[in-house]
Structure formats: structure tokens, C-alpha cells
Image (tube, rainbow, N blue to C red):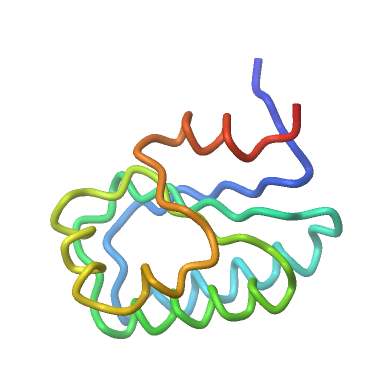
Length: 114
């Protein structure tokens, strides 16, 4: 049985984030947030992300700022070590309005309404 929660949107990113697909992710999240009335949290499941380039990092920053303005948290889950190392060299994690979770299950447990 699949559990859902109108307050939580989870998106699984199935490839590395780079200039070719970063804008698509921005637009997808924007469209979902506009339609998501009661939405409080967006979780990007990053288990398949092996690399993030500068353009994608800028997109993540823009997503974070837009969601912050809307009162919606941006969270990451299952971020691989090398990707986390890359993020730590930037200010993104300091500005992230949400959390980074070790697993998607941990994110769901922490954010879904009981």
C-alpha cells in the first residue's frame, strides 16, 4: 500500500543534475507547487545523482529561494558522498531551508503528517 500526504511532494531525480536538465527540474517543481495548495515540503530523492554542475547548483538555489518565499521546505534525501562533498564547497547547504536526510524513509517519517 502506498502512503501519500498532501503536505509532502517527493520527486526522485534519476540522473545527474547539469545544465541540460536543471531548468526542467525548476519548472517541474514550480508547476507542482502552484498546484499543490496544502504543500509544505518538497523532497528531492537524489540516490541516482552522481554529479551536480554549476548550472544545476544555481537552479537548486533558485528553487530553494522560491520555496522559502512560499513557506515550503526543500529537503534532500539519499545524497551520495561525492555529491554532498561538492555541495559542502558551496553556500547551498547553509542556505537550504530544509534538511538533508540519510534515507527517503527518514525524510517521510520526519515530514509526513501523522
